[in-house]
Image 1 (cartoon, rainbow, N blue to C red):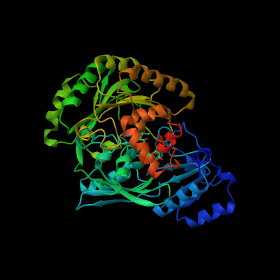
Image 2: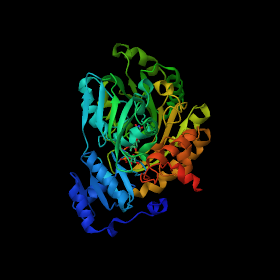
Image 3: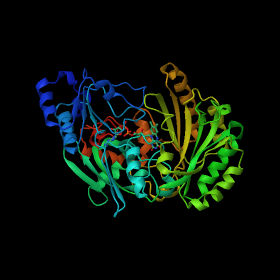
Length: 479
Ligand SMILES: Cc1cc2nc3c(=O)[nH]c(=O)nc-3n(C[C@H](O)[C@H](O)[C@H](O)COP(=O)(O)OP(=O)(O)OC[C@H]3O[C@@H](n4cnc5c(N)ncnc54)[C@H](O)[C@@H]3O)c2cc1C
């Protein structure tokens, strides 16, 4: 099969019904097609802006189902997408016309108490993992919401509350079981298929379907954290203070900076509802007895309008914003890495943040230093180890009628900041922005990724992602 024929893809509607029926019989999981009662629910993505209509959705229950689905796609030249949590901003967990491998029934989490490790099946969300690990006083470094999929977040890198203390999510990854494009299932770790293990730590879903992740658990349970809100008049002072603290403060302290509109819900005093404010959401994993002392200077920087920081179980902190961002909202993402946040950049942030176009739209800056910096930029596929901040600007709203307005705001904000950035962005926080942006995300790791892609997926079967092209293709004049 040539790459050209794969690129063209085959519509599922052209397939022989008997072949689909035999495929269905070979599965333990469900096969959902257009017209089935559950089709619309099964194809729905977290980002309501993306509306894709796959020809077949395979709800895999085990690695054998995944192998069957991969082989069926390959044999019939079907476009293939892989869905973990379905959260991806660009909607890369689904496709039009082709086949979607939906891992959501694969929900197993096993904590090995003796080894302190956590085995997680490919369809879990981070809420599933937190639920299983918290009773054992363990956590896996994850993101800032519990509904995000383990699959996409981990394979793209993984930024969260524990990044400064324990590194990216991939820095706690010990091994993966992967179904490859040829249907084989192999394990990749530091000792086995090392090239693949290097590539999946940041290279996304380009190399196969990960059916199972093995993580090193970290001893974290109750932390001192939560959001603090400041009026915008204090935002520049607070942002500068946060920048300096997060670059030099103890690694047990993390906190992401954001601009938000205060939601009109009971937990916030009515006088603050719908006000635009600067927010830092903290997570301190050090000795709880020390926490008030650590937070004393933070509380002195400027008077906080609202201060919710205090002792909180990590799973509660990680799901604090789930209700504000339910599935189905319209999302438009723009992102970049930053090494520095100069005062000039901070002023630009303030100028654009004052224009937050809708009540859900926001800007976040996530710290990346500490333990994340102790891994070299070529040690895993995730290249921006020297960056200090991941910036994401998102236009978000329930109403598609506001899309043009929020997309324009997000693009203009991003364009104003981009010249000050480190050049590339976190692949998990961009839309489909072209191959240059994918290359910029990996920099000098791209060539190696491309060679590994050629080894494990030479026909680019796994291409509904931030795509790394197989090296052989580059030799044909399509870099
Ligand atoms: C509200 C929200 C909050 C977020 N917060 C954070 C955060 O705090 N930190 C952070 O790092 N990121 C965060 N993200 C970004 C998130 O990491 C990406 O959206 C990621 O792609 C989500 O993974 P998923 O499995 O849910 O996505 P999906 O849409 O299911 O998949 C995304 C991509 O990953 C591939 N993929 C997924 N699972 C597998 C698998 N098992 N094997 C092979 N390929 C797979 C898919 O093929 C697709 O290309 C957030 C996203 C949202 C929407």
